[in-house]
Length: 438
Image (cartoon, rainbow, N blue to C red):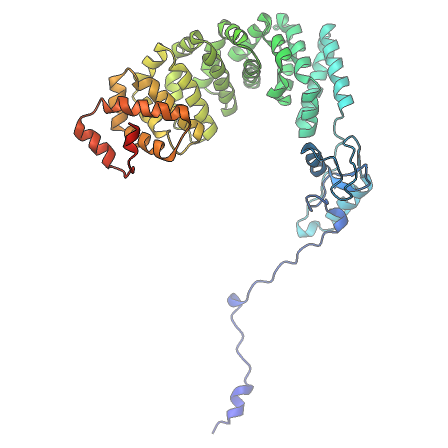
């Protein structure tokens, strides 16, 4: 007879290994001295402020850019021009990273000393002087220096932008434009530097240099026959020029022989997404100010390309295509080209929702222009559900101008369908009396 106590003395069976929970990887302890007091993250570029507190450079510069004038720790007045690299702490952090490399900690690279305003002004002054003296070698050297610094860090790029890099580069471009075939690499390098600094660097003064006849001719030549990089940089330059220019300058740019044709080709036969976006933006600026430019763009067969772009999933691309198409529909040739495209109306109706508020406004505006005096487009819009979507748009709300055009469009569409069709349209969704807008 088995004794009762023996059962309790038996050792419990071990659980299968599969049921054993995995051991937790211990967290790596980071010294508080290595953490930035603002972000609480490991510092990658420690700098000491005028109050004696060390921060990560990106964090303290962001703090200053937000308008704060006091030290986050001591609350004392903080001088924005005194941020000294803490070399000793950087080396200590690097040594700590190397000691913990087996745990997956990567060594932080040695920070580069950022560009100062004085250094930027010295470089740009030398660039402007080289352009005036027509020293192509020195001009090319400094343009390459500007491009390298602009790509090195966001801080350096902003420093160059605010120091007048756009004006200096545009002046150098204009100085050698008349001799493009003698200095093609120089001019392409200047445009590359300008693109690296950013479109915001092109102000009214820089635009005046780029809008010179010789400069515009060179830009067209690059758009037509330049390398892929040159074509992209030229498109960015034209876009930046138009963004900073008046209507008169915009008309001058669009009237330059081959300009509209070259930009339209970048849309029809794109070399890259970024180049296409720059070309679309440039065309938008031109057609918004000049009906003749819109007619020229239509003649280049851009409308079918724009309709195809409406199927792009990327929001920014879709918005740009809608903006250009809406601008082209202001001219009769643009409306004729869009009416003749089998997918124009369906694509516009589809893009009324699920892209962005801006895309909705542009799609309604384009439909309003297309269906205003075209019975075929109106019937097609009804067939693809425009009536229901317009009613829904009025229900959920939109801008005043869009609301006005949507209401007018509903009234226009109502005149192109029978009574039963009208009832069917309204009954497909419970619109809770939105029909009163019609």
